[in-house]
Length: 389
Ligand code: SF4
Ligand code: SF4
Image (cartoon, rainbow, N blue to C red; front, side, top):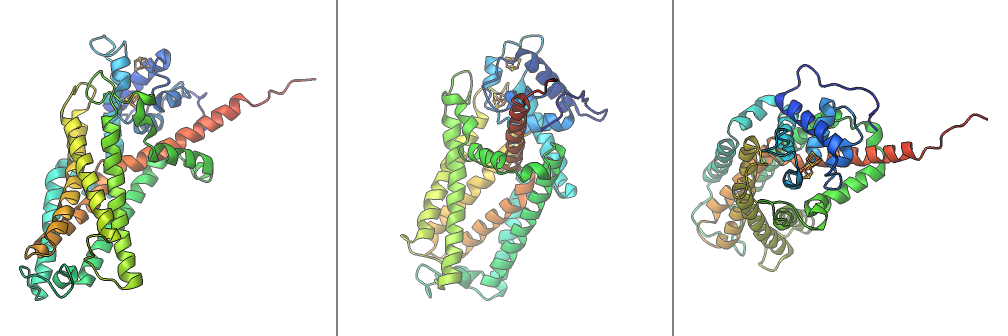
């Protein structure tokens, strides 16, 4: 638990986003009207003063449902101008940037995430196509030696596995380094991570997208009206991604354990999982893009829009190129479609540590600290007081 009785101040190097979040939290801490809205407000009440770590913790608990903006009597045009979703969103983006690893690559993505991701996808696809060319593969021929056409006839298995493994391991390392840095910054220590209950509760909240339900009425997706649309699109995208991952894992088991080579039949498990997951991802990504670009922009941060759109476009690209590959895998363009799909998938892995994807991990860490703080606070309140005899 944080020592919330001690006086804590923001450092001299605090950013404008930290100062604005601190100002909003101090007003909210006096008001407390939104206490039941989400995890931010109950976590806020455990502090009388806010350090940079506390504010970053609160910012990553917020998921921009916008409910507190439309409920707030101090929101613009009130002279206090309290806009919690916008303040938290800007601070969240700073926390992603501060803890991104390594910083020079993060800076590159920061400048133009969409262009860098597109160039990466095209470059990786180009590498695969050149490899196929120099390997003597006929890119525009039907690969009929294996029913449906053989992927490894175009891009050799060793090349595919080496490039994919290197990319995946790099992404895993960069994500871990970022998560460790962020966890330290918000005071999530080793001791807390050894306690199962806060972790289990945080996983439950994350898996069910609990706070996107807005207590049953939904979020303020596009304005003052409540809606569960964002939650549904978020579920479609997240579970669609999970199904596609399951499809790839199943394919790997088929290949390595049973020796069954890809591509697989239309009614095989990897294809069914991949098709359902791909369609869900397309629906979720288009829906979230539409919600982002429409509706009231007042409670949103303009600086967060670019990284959000870049990630959604990459996810849409993965799903769309995967479905196209499935549709054309018995035709002459299978080789090109395969290279483009693999390029998009690997570009996504490389962009993961510098994109909004990191929000999933930071939010999970923030939820673990939230549940640990609450447990500690309840234990503190219910502790029997010693009386002198
Ligand atoms: S957002 Fe506004 S209404 Fe809600 S707790 Fe803060 S000051 Fe009060
Ligand atoms: S925008 Fe939603 S999640 Fe964020 S602080 Fe307000 S009510 Fe909580």
